[in-house]
Structures are given as C-alpha cells and as structure tokens.
Image (tube, rainbow, N blue to C red; front, side, top):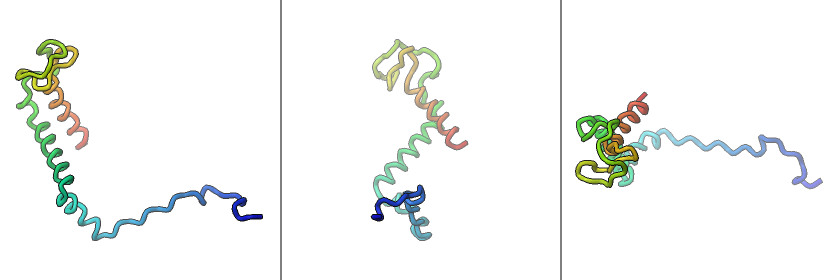
Length: 107
C-alpha cells in the first residue's frame, strides 16, 4: 500500500509549537518599540487618550447625558464633534467614555 493511504490521527496534523524568543530578545522588545516611529506614534496616542480620559470632566463643555443642542448638529465651536440623534454633545460623551474604558482596562 502506498504511504499516502495510511490512516492519520489528529496528532499528525497538529501545528508545530513556535520556538520561544530568546531571553535577550524579550528584554529588548520595549526598547525596540520606542526606537521605531510606529511605536512612538502608538505610545503618543495612548498617552493623549489616557490624559484626555483623566482630565475629561475639565475639558468636557457639556454634561454628556443632558440634551444641549439640536439633534444631529454639525461640528461647531459649541459642539466640537457635533451632537447625536437626541442632541447630546458627542465630544463630552467621548471624553467620559474614554474614562470608563480606562477604568475597565485597569481593572
């Protein structure tokens, strides 16, 4: 019988486990991320979002749960990101939502 007709078990099709990274490569990974521009850009975005979430109540022009304008208004000086379908300020909602997301991520 040719070898291609023998019965195979599931273990024959299991993918090989990837080799673990050497210890010196694992220690250098954070440095390599910061050295490259995409890593710096990502770190800057994380810092800006975290900072905005921490000082959100100071930056938010309106209460995110109160109707503060007409529904679906375009962005303006009063509402930097416009309003939602009910008339609530979207910018305030994003700042308060980032705060909630930060608390969940830390927990």
